[in-house]
Length: 491
Image (cartoon, rainbow, N blue to C red; front, side, top):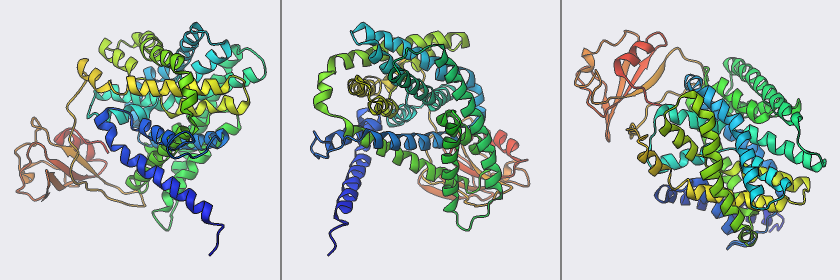
């Protein structure tokens, strides 16, 4: 009986147990109103060296590398699911929040940290590290609490959260490099930020269009190879611009947006695979970050950490967001909601590992403070987002999810598509037989999902409020079909 594979077997078993516990524990997040990522973090802490699992782990370099890869894959998944039309509608305010908003939050947080007696190096690092929000945390809370908010507001939060991480990464790395060199950050930092963002954006768009061209001409032997190819594109999109001093995080998100808004072979399957990869990346990243936490050290920063977490939620984020969004004439209720929905997640904790790797004397203290700030943000803001949305009157009626879904899987580009519509009470098709509808010759109703029943789409079938109707249509007929049936359901 060979003994060498035993450590690997134990490692895999431990990883499997942690993943399973994390996923099963996520069911409680909706009932508790907590971001699901926070539960993953707590599972990691319980399994750590000072927890019940007693797993010794303090490898900051490994955590940083895995976290970087995980964040790139999460951003790629977010970009694939970002609708370009929606992006255009909120691009200006989202861009301002993702750049000036991150920088402004970093400055205000640095002042807050300095006010409670932290040194300038610690204050500047803490400000830069906690300056960006976490999309996964925000939307896991909204979904878990059963809250559906106005579409424009949801898109604004999604785009801001999806594109503001690169700015925080750039600020943290530049600040750390300056402190290691014994220099004070100067005007050159602003130029460096602009340069990295510009190179990353240009490189990402170019790689995205190159990926479109490649996917349109690739004839792979198995559908499972297409996700492998898109993962390769994600790696290239992150790595290539980074090598020429661009932001790989901006690049990978931009490349995914370009890919996701073009014709994709096996589109449904690709999105499903990348969604699973993004979830796995989140779970793995939070588990590792939880393993890095030492509760005994966290207790020592409880006072300053609690102050900074509350200062971020009640002062820094609202002040910066309000000042930046006022010129866009958004309703005060929406500005207030965006100000409050500023959850912090895995990115700040991951960024806090970089000063540790750089050997800064204040690095471990900064890491503990940042960890505490993230937990405070998740508990204070995460548990109240649903209540705040209702109090501000921003909750809207959500379309119920159908109990069955009809999809077409194809590895090649097709001349038509299947789209679904939710039949509302005021819809023009309510009470009509399918045979009575003026559907174009090249389109057809394929299936009606009514509660638990699947109904064959025959001419005599009468459409009722609450039905989910699946329609095959060609590109030229799609606008008319959308006008006839009304609101198209999102994927």
